[in-house]
Length: 421
Image (cartoon, rainbow, N blue to C red; front, top):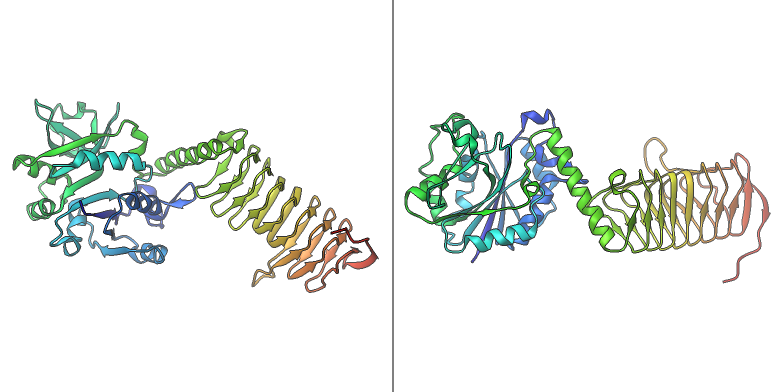
């Protein structure tokens, strides 16, 4: 069955108390909307329609390079039903299914969406649900005596006794497109919030005798929505634990996952060891048999070959390490390329920023950078070269191959015997 996806991403979320659109807040280093787009992609849709509203231009700009998106603006925001109404033009004449996903629900697994789609066969609508001991502000799924779904009631509109229902609406649905469009025209704002509820589509379809199903998600963490900073922190913890688990299953040793921060998209080879209190950000690639930390900070663009070390209190950014290169402790390496078997001494710094622009540094194979060295970019340190302790190499004053330099500014002390190749 052909399918289109509508993602609800227009909300402001006043409880976040943020100038940043909610869907641009990050979980495991990745914007919320990116997580949901990846969910959508697993459904192999014909089209992904993103409903934007609050700070719409910022959201569009953030995902301008993402292929195949259609952005539609909801202004003003008058509820979830009103949001889906904005996609009428994109859904008109479409005879397939429509998946509605929430832009602030980042943790749904592909297997859950596949199961939802299987459960939807032969139904006009299917809602993804879960059970909570304390349903709180979630809408409740109402069933008749035979167990058929008859309605979803928002928390503010619950009748007496309905607050005891533990099955809640996740906000994720599959609809038959013509049935959905027909019901959108019948929605009203006769409710506690004065909004057009998408949940009312379920009630209308059930009242019309159309088959409505629910698929229960056993792991309620998958359908956590983000409305507060506390929700954001909880989802971040869950997502990063998934990242760590996947890495460990692939052969990476993470000595203490609870005290290690690794974002989504990080690639790490087998037999690498990650020590506690290290932070590894999205866009980092680490080879096999490496050693990271403790207290290492690897920022985006860092790429380590095999058998490398980034030790205690070392920070890297756009740093490329050739195989066997090491920075043991207390160093900053930004915008730098290291050859093979380079040693970076404690307290060494690549001064990559001149106050206006970032500059690049190159360090050749087998170079030895002494403790406390400052390399003022742009500069090149040749193969098998060495700097003495506390040396300052000024910008543009390249160190030739097989040369030892010392002092501030650096001066040539002697030459070294070249290594056999």
